[in-house]
Image (cartoon, rainbow, N blue to C red; front, side, top):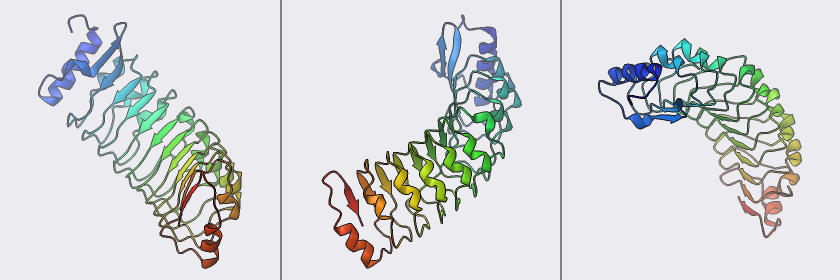
Length: 272
C-alpha cells in the first residue's frame, strides 16, 4: 500500500471514511502500478467520492449492491472505462456521467428503479452487453437502434410493451432476454436480427409472431411460453439452427397443435 500512487491512496482513504472502516486492499486490482479494476461492491455506499476520476486507468468498475442514487459527474472523465456494474442500487435514472463513456462495452443496471433511458444512446455505440432486468422502464427510445455492436440484451421484468422499429438495426444481437414484460407485439422487421441465437419472450402478451421470423437462420433456442399465441408461422419450426422451441401455456388453436404434433426432428425439442 505504501507504494500506491498518491491519487489512489487518497481515494482509498475517502472510501474507507464513507464505510467507517478500512476496506480490503484486494478491491484495487493493479497492473504496472495502475489501477485497472475497482471492486466497491456490497459496501452500503450512498455516494462515491468525485476523486474517483483520478483513477484514469480503471477499465472495470464494480459498484454492485450499494445504496447509490447518483454518480459523481467527474466519473464521465474516466475515458478508459469499459465495464460498469451498478446492479442492486437505488438509481431512478441513468447517471448523466455514464453518457460520456464512449469506450463502454458492458453496462449492468439490473435491479434498480430506473423509469426511462436517455433519448440519445449514440455515445454507447460500442456497447456489447446491456443489463436492465428488474427496473421500471416502460419504453425503449428510438435511438436504441444505434447500439449496433450489442450482443446481449436483458430487459426482463420491466413494463415494456413493444420494441421501436429501429430495434431491427441490432444486427449483432445474439441473446435477447425479455421475459415477464408486457410485450404485445414484435415489429415486422424483427427478422433483421440475423445474428440472434437465443430469444426469451416468455410470460408476455404476444398474440402472434411476425412472418419475418423465418429470416432468423441462427436462432437456436426460443422460449415463448405463457403468452397469448394461437398460431405460429410454419417457418418458425423449420428454422435450420433451431434446437428448442417452447410454446407451453399458450391458447394454441387445434390446427396449430396438430401441425406441431407432426413436426418431428431428432435434434429439435418442441414443447406445447
